[in-house]
Amino acid sequence: MVSTRRSMKKNHKVGIRGGLYAIGTALILLSLPAGAQSPSPAQARQWCFGTSGIDDDQRLAGCSVVLRANPSNARALANRGETFRRKGEAERALADLNRAIDLDPKDAIAWYNRGIAYDDLGDRDHAIADYTSAIKLSPRDPFYYNNRGNSYAGKDDYAHALADYDQAIKLDPKFALAYYNRGSAYREHDEADRALADLDMSIKLDPNYGNAYGNRARIYRDRGDRARALADFAKSLQLSPNNDRDFFARANMYFDEHDYARALEDYDRSIKANASYAGTFNSRCMTRAILGRLQEALADCEQSLKMAPDDPYTLDSRALTYLKLGNLDAAIADYDAALSAKPGYDSSLYGRGLAKRKKGDSEGAERDIAAAKASNAKIGDEFAHYGIE
Image (tube, rainbow, N blue to C red; front, side):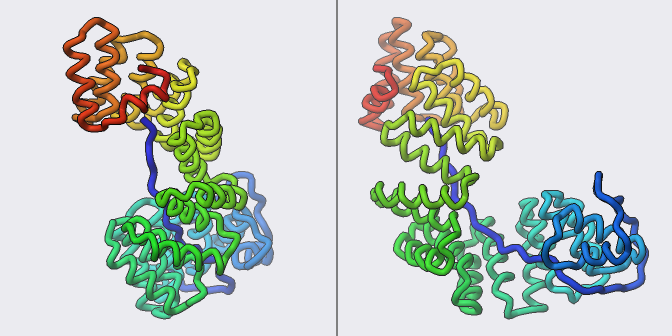
């Protein structure tokens, strides 16, 4: 059985601030990034505080030199911390941002950037607290409300999330990302009309933001409007060619339509863009099994189970693969394990029934198949598409 995934909210990320800001206190400095040349003091200031044409390694090198000369430069700490966050080093980002905030607790952007770092770590409560501190210092900045709304949404607190998105849009009626996030929240709460209106507005304000097309595609998909859904997914992936979630969602559409070859192509692309999601390996395992690529299917299921042990959907997919290979005992064992994790699962009941029938256990087979059909009257048709009857 293929897996599903939720769409993502998107935080607004601020840029690097210019200017010098110093308060005298000691700090243990990090070394320069590996491979970075040590710039002159003037070049270091330009790299640390310049607002354009500076890459992340230059930023880190420049701010480290500035901090070597003045360990208590709060702005340099804040800029280096934000750069560490951009490079995916959230813990190092927190170390610098903690120090920057200690030195200047009235720096709203430092609080905000630390909130993003906490969000990156999945720590919604600390993120909300930091965004709230930023809002207290700068209550008319729509970005702070937008990001706090995302943190609330991450906690499934949609009432507070929607209130924050509303405030962000009130402060900036042309804030495309806030419309996108509010629309995504509405979609997850089954308010499709409101979601569609917000996503339409997000696209109108920023027609080059791929994720908005992807989430609008999901609304069209759920409404059965296949043509519009596929058109929006195509636009999303044209604008964001490494969007693994939209490749995955489009692959699931193809899978549900029994277009397994196209589904496999999109699962391949999704994994190429992001190989960290177990569900995509499971879905590709299932698709490869249906297409008769059984050894490749087993490899995908094994990878999925390494990442998510005892997942019933992957156990069900591997069981189908074993069933097609004729390894009936292994198939029954996996179906048993899937049903232990997810009792009454129609796919596993039906598959186990077929395996039992092939082993000559007619009574057990009919019991499982009847239970599966009681849950899903069309389960036999689904297995016929898989090449098993």
